[in-house]
Length: 370
Image 1 (cartoon, rainbow, N blue to C red):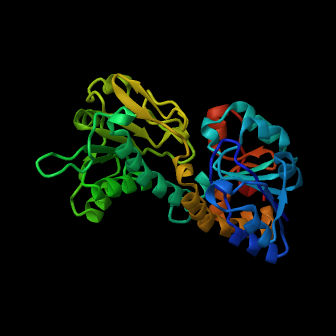
Image 2: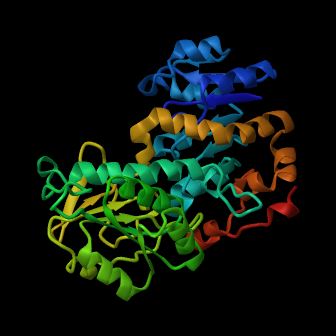
Image 3: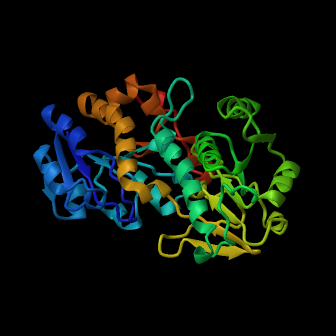
């Protein structure tokens, strides 16, 4: 089987596989094509991939043209849609719930098989490929908050942890999943006061246990969120509904109750954002202000630490890639329920319910097709 690792046109610095995993695929008789310079930013240089047995290709089109399986880190870009081969397998963080309908239509027309890392789910209901990305995102959210509290970055000049005689910043975390839990850990580690809200009491119990009651926990309701926002210097949005668009749990009117100069870091922006006022930003223009509140909304924040992001993604993704290589897509989907859960589209047939919900296209049960 032929695997392709392209440069991410979105500017995402991550790769999906490292040279070590490429070497394993090649040793098992498979071919791996890597686009020239794909790992340059993260110091996974072409020479390392060549030493692992990969062939370096010099164009994006050739990567798509020669690969049975394209293994991406970020989602497909519009200019890549016309490069997709018929019946190609496409692995990525696709996030189709917030995708353009033209993207979904093209994937179906090309009879592609589309597997989203964000959907792969094991028997315990965990998302093994998304998990380490969420761990990075949670920790990065507090690094971002610390940076943008500086006056030079537009903040009001706050040290998150405070000092003797000066109280710490109040960090409000919305969502106690993997992102929220890691944000809580990082904020507490810096000495901030943390309030974390979630609808799931089991997750809040876990927060209390992990952090020995050092974080304040509350059930998320409109009233409790509003009260927490009044106190916040920083708000971390960490809401995830698997495969679906994030709900807006903070409205524009609620922003008016926040302190002027406070900061929102919306880590749910990949799935549409959990603040009504959120919109995607870029590394060149990362923040904007609404109602006196700064918003940081860069998608794929783990790309900012692309080497760690690549290693983390590779560690959890390689076993699934190896299954596809050794068994072929049909047999791999038959035997691996977690991988099967990751399907958006199978050979041009819509599978995941979100496609019907968001785009009105009829979906089929994958079990009836295998």
